[in-house]
Image 1 (cartoon, helix red, strand yellow):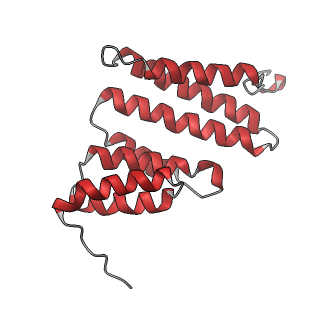
Image 2 (cartoon, helix red, strand yellow):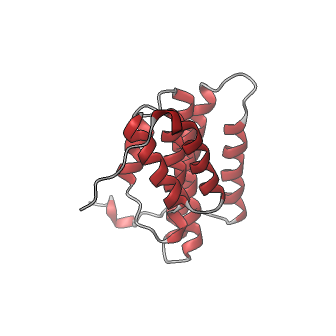
Image 3 (cartoon, helix red, strand yellow):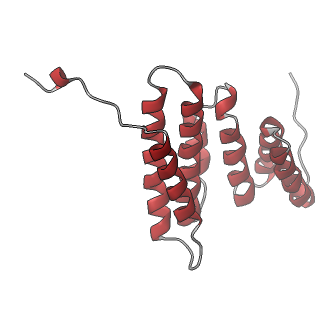
Length: 164
């Protein structure tokens, strides 16, 4: 139908700034599109990979169909162990907040599960974090506070599931 035009390599820094700007303007679709253009030219651009992960997860609470497998594909492309664990935690935290805001039956249990997964990833990131960087501690504490303030609980298994 249409053949997409290719971004020039020297335009990547400005395009990346524009993608970050669109995220701040609450236009994650535009940010994602720009990142795709950058990655078409520079497939290993870590800033673009992180920005596209954030742009995609910005859309969780807005009823967009965002495939977990696509986000996971980008997360695996993050080369730094700390950043990969940190941003994986962010994705789970955002998924948890979106679930919590849905106010549907079972959404609070799902939110709890996502928050716990986020906290697990933040703990992994904490183990390899750069000296003096406590961002993961702040995120972990934030998740714990949301769980406690909303009295979130894990899913209860039916008693007869394990009874034979």
